[in-house]
Amino acid sequence: MRKPVIAGNWKMNKIRDEALQFVYAVGEKLPSNSQLDSIICAPAIILRDLVKRQGDNLRIGGQNMHAKECGAYTGEISPIMLKSTGVEYVILGHSERRQYFNETNETVNEKVLAALANDLRPIICVGESLEEREQNKTNEVLYEQVTKAFVNVDPKDIDDIIIAYEPIWAIGTGKVASSDMADEACGYIRSLIEKIFDHSIAERVRILYGGSVSTATVDELMAKEHIDGALVGGASLKEEDFIRLCESAVKVQKV
Image 1 (tube, rainbow, N blue to C red):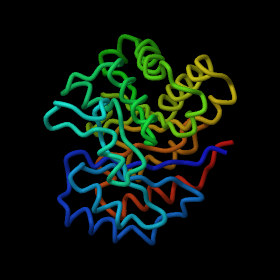
Image 2: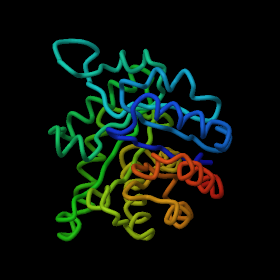
Image 3: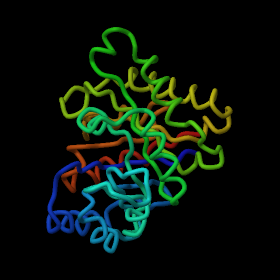
């Protein structure tokens, strides 16, 4: 069975005291990690503080990393540095990284391979813009992003990889792809994984939906065949909302 995932992406929000208050507040209220992977991806500067206090049912992740292990890359964080904080996950290829920091499909692939080589679990983000959606290029964009992200990825690592479908036009806008639209895109991503690897691997990989997910929309999304959870922005900043999202995710498990 594909264990569901709720991953919160705090982006550039929360200072240390706010973050610690959040972790203390949700700690004992989250579903068991035998039922759900509950993840908070926080700013790098507070990762170690959160890892030390994450408890049994919450895991901490980074929001980005450089592909190189060391070097003259001022301001960057290497996979070794990230791993040394104790985190298990890292978001890679988020649309904001692609848009504002010029990340490409090729650099995302480099980071995916570097994460796996350093025992980090990548959450690989893919998704189309509004213009691309309106031009019926969604599948074309997803094909390029997914196939290039998985170049040279070993099939044995698939259980450590999560894919997040995040249509750019739905991120932070309040717009949400309908559950059918989201499931169709996630199903297409799963079909691409089957072509790259095989059917059994495609059935195991976990695919999340992200894009203005809220407590009002999560139940319908989670009920869909190909959606195994959510990568959540704003709704992950409030303790009660994050708990509600996690509770919803354990109601349905995909076989």
